[in-house]
Length: 176
Image: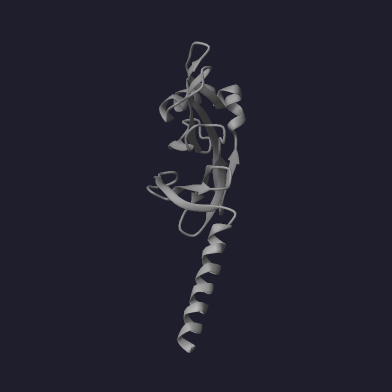
């Protein structure tokens, strides 16, 4: 009798633990860690997480070191055919004595409709300052309408200019 009671209690506790994961709001796992050279070699990292929700998957980005991580932002596109991706992370260092800039590029793939097939790109820019406390300031607005774009087929071939870190750095050299 005691043996059956122990088995039943074990079974019930297993169900309770499993159901907590089943109904959890978001399930996130680390996807990428990118080492960055900002003020010195490998002083910070960008942490990219893939999260699953009831709607679909999305990305969460964090920036920092082993002691402190700052939430940078998330990226989702629930209308896309495939899960969103972090394409690139980079640092821009201005020659004009301005603070460094964290650059992130995300994308999502659209397909299987007669009107549209291709990738949507989203560029984010964050100014980095370190005055005893690490701080990020979103300055994506300096890109204007170029912060997002589409490349593929949509009533003809469409191209997006800022798909790589080097293209964004060239733009920043001219405009920042």
